[in-house]
Image (tube, rainbow, N blue to C red; front, top):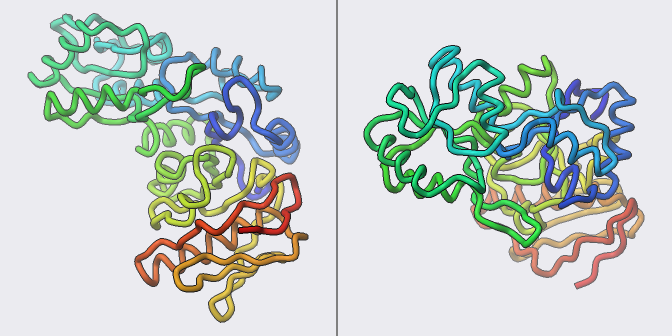
Length: 336
């Protein structure tokens, strides 16, 4: 993968880090991929942090990162606004420092919610946004002020657990105003378009852990995508993914950047990769192997058999009897 593609666009949470620590094998995989000539872009829907702060967080996990390698939904939203309204245009900002900085960087002017000359509203996650400004912005959008949202993520990870994300406010404003915003973040186009433009990528690869943002975004742009199974997507979600949410490649972790990805072979309703075979019997997914095959091959036959069954029958397979093999290079036997 690192020699076929020129830029890997890496999602962060669940791919590079979890909380304040690295995802297992991520630092060394990124280092080896870079040594093979693969350029890295760190792509995030989070609009609250500046690229410098995002890079600093990445570096704390043992992965070298420069602010120039970071692309945020705030930057993508700013590009949308710049192209529509031109340099110097006044824009109402509801969000954190990352959103304000992104507008300043492209020559737009951040203004208050009551500014009568504002040409648009842009919103992003901001824990210090006050309710009176949200109310005033809502009335202005309902009165016709154009609206760009950085992203629509319903949840965000915090030190105290999963909390409401910017998408919750987007839903509230949409319900009140009857207006659908232009969305910059994944799975919409602007963020990935911005990343490709900034990196001059000719053969980009999207790498993520979420089907409904990372993978769907890549599918919409018709670019290859690698799903790593280190984040929010589990066995049942992968097996039931419809065509618009299916990755080109699947791997246990970021070491998938360093290997070839051969499609499983199909014969008599059975899918084989390495020492693993998978088939569907009476709606249940069955996987067999001698324990010597790689975990990547296990995921590949699971995906191939499950998606084939879903496409042929319209029904998702039952995965309740399967256990993902122990995952550290070599897969173990499956047990009920």
